[in-house]
Length: 124
Image 1 (tube, helix red, strand yellow):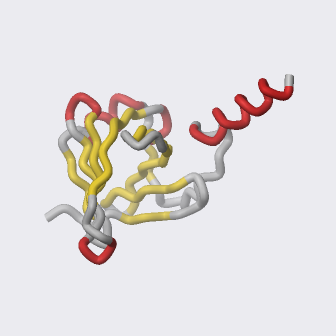
Image 2 (image 1 turned 180 degrees about the vertical axis):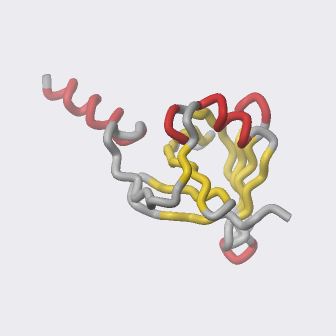
Protein backbone atom coordinates (compact mmCIF):
# COMPACT_ATOMS: atom_id res chain seq x y z
CA UNK A 1 0.00 0.00 0.00
CA UNK A 2 2.84 2.35 0.82
CA UNK A 3 4.29 1.82 -2.68
CA UNK A 4 0.93 2.69 -4.24
CA UNK A 5 0.86 6.05 -2.46
CA UNK A 6 4.46 6.74 -3.47
CA UNK A 7 3.65 5.99 -7.12
CA UNK A 8 0.51 8.11 -7.04
CA UNK A 9 2.48 10.93 -5.45
CA UNK A 10 5.13 10.79 -8.18
CA UNK A 11 2.49 10.79 -10.91
CA UNK A 12 0.97 13.88 -9.34
CA UNK A 13 4.30 15.69 -9.72
CA UNK A 14 4.27 15.40 -13.50
CA UNK A 15 0.64 16.13 -14.33
CA UNK A 16 -1.32 19.30 -13.70
CA UNK A 17 -3.58 19.04 -10.69
CA UNK A 18 -7.29 19.42 -11.18
CA UNK A 19 -8.35 22.78 -9.88
CA UNK A 20 -4.77 24.06 -10.15
CA UNK A 21 -4.46 27.74 -9.32
CA UNK A 22 -2.70 29.05 -12.41
CA UNK A 23 -2.74 32.68 -11.21
CA UNK A 24 -5.05 33.70 -14.05
CA UNK A 25 -5.91 37.35 -14.45
CA UNK A 26 -9.30 38.67 -15.49
CA UNK A 27 -7.87 39.77 -18.85
CA UNK A 28 -6.34 36.37 -19.70
CA UNK A 29 -8.00 34.59 -22.62
CA UNK A 30 -7.85 30.82 -22.29
CA UNK A 31 -7.91 28.36 -25.17
CA UNK A 32 -11.22 26.52 -25.25
CA UNK A 33 -9.88 23.19 -26.49
CA UNK A 34 -6.72 21.27 -27.32
CA UNK A 35 -7.30 21.50 -31.10
CA UNK A 36 -7.32 25.30 -31.03
CA UNK A 37 -4.13 25.31 -28.99
CA UNK A 38 -2.39 22.87 -31.36
CA UNK A 39 -3.40 25.05 -34.32
CA UNK A 40 -2.11 28.16 -32.56
CA UNK A 41 1.24 26.64 -31.56
CA UNK A 42 2.27 24.29 -34.39
CA UNK A 43 5.18 25.75 -36.34
CA UNK A 44 5.54 28.68 -33.96
CA UNK A 45 8.63 29.88 -32.15
CA UNK A 46 7.98 31.90 -29.02
CA UNK A 47 10.68 34.31 -27.87
CA UNK A 48 10.67 35.35 -24.23
CA UNK A 49 12.01 38.60 -22.82
CA UNK A 50 15.22 36.88 -21.68
CA UNK A 51 15.75 35.84 -25.36
CA UNK A 52 15.03 32.17 -24.66
CA UNK A 53 12.98 30.47 -27.41
CA UNK A 54 10.41 27.69 -27.39
CA UNK A 55 9.80 26.00 -30.74
CA UNK A 56 6.68 23.89 -31.29
CA UNK A 57 7.11 21.76 -34.41
CA UNK A 58 4.53 19.75 -36.31
CA UNK A 59 4.36 16.15 -35.17
CA UNK A 60 5.03 17.10 -31.54
CA UNK A 61 8.77 17.88 -31.62
CA UNK A 62 9.80 20.60 -29.15
CA UNK A 63 12.97 22.53 -28.38
CA UNK A 64 13.89 25.24 -25.93
CA UNK A 65 17.01 27.29 -26.62
CA UNK A 66 18.43 29.33 -23.77
CA UNK A 67 19.61 32.88 -24.39
CA UNK A 68 23.35 33.44 -24.70
CA UNK A 69 23.24 35.13 -21.29
CA UNK A 70 21.88 31.85 -19.88
CA UNK A 71 24.39 29.55 -21.55
CA UNK A 72 22.85 29.23 -25.01
CA UNK A 73 22.24 25.48 -24.88
CA UNK A 74 19.12 23.69 -26.06
CA UNK A 75 16.80 21.09 -24.58
CA UNK A 76 14.75 18.79 -26.81
CA UNK A 77 11.59 16.79 -26.30
CA UNK A 78 7.99 16.41 -27.35
CA UNK A 79 4.92 18.52 -26.66
CA UNK A 80 1.23 17.77 -26.41
CA UNK A 81 -1.73 20.05 -25.87
CA UNK A 82 -4.57 19.41 -23.48
CA UNK A 83 -7.74 21.09 -22.36
CA UNK A 84 -7.82 24.66 -21.05
CA UNK A 85 -4.61 25.75 -22.76
CA UNK A 86 -2.29 23.32 -21.00
CA UNK A 87 0.79 22.14 -22.86
CA UNK A 88 2.89 19.35 -21.42
CA UNK A 89 6.48 18.84 -22.50
CA UNK A 90 8.44 15.61 -22.03
CA UNK A 91 12.15 16.32 -22.35
CA UNK A 92 14.63 13.75 -23.63
CA UNK A 93 16.48 13.93 -20.31
CA UNK A 94 13.46 12.42 -18.54
CA UNK A 95 12.08 15.62 -17.00
CA UNK A 96 8.63 16.92 -17.85
CA UNK A 97 6.45 19.93 -17.14
CA UNK A 98 2.99 21.25 -17.85
CA UNK A 99 2.22 24.94 -18.31
CA UNK A 100 -0.87 26.91 -19.23
CA UNK A 101 -0.72 29.16 -22.30
CA UNK A 102 -3.08 32.12 -22.48
CA UNK A 103 -3.42 35.25 -24.57
CA UNK A 104 -3.17 38.54 -22.73
CA UNK A 105 -2.94 41.98 -24.26
CA UNK A 106 -2.49 40.46 -27.72
CA UNK A 107 0.39 38.13 -26.88
CA UNK A 108 1.02 34.71 -25.42
CA UNK A 109 1.78 34.36 -21.72
CA UNK A 110 3.04 31.16 -20.13
CA UNK A 111 1.71 30.37 -16.66
CA UNK A 112 3.62 27.80 -14.63
CA UNK A 113 2.25 25.49 -11.98
CA UNK A 114 4.24 27.29 -9.29
CA UNK A 115 2.63 30.66 -10.08
CA UNK A 116 5.18 32.05 -12.55
CA UNK A 117 4.00 34.30 -15.37
CA UNK A 118 6.21 34.62 -18.47
CA UNK A 119 5.07 36.93 -21.27
CA UNK A 120 6.21 36.24 -24.81
CA UNK A 121 7.58 39.02 -26.97
CA UNK A 122 5.15 40.21 -29.62
CA UNK A 123 5.79 38.66 -33.02
CA UNK A 124 7.21 41.03 -35.59
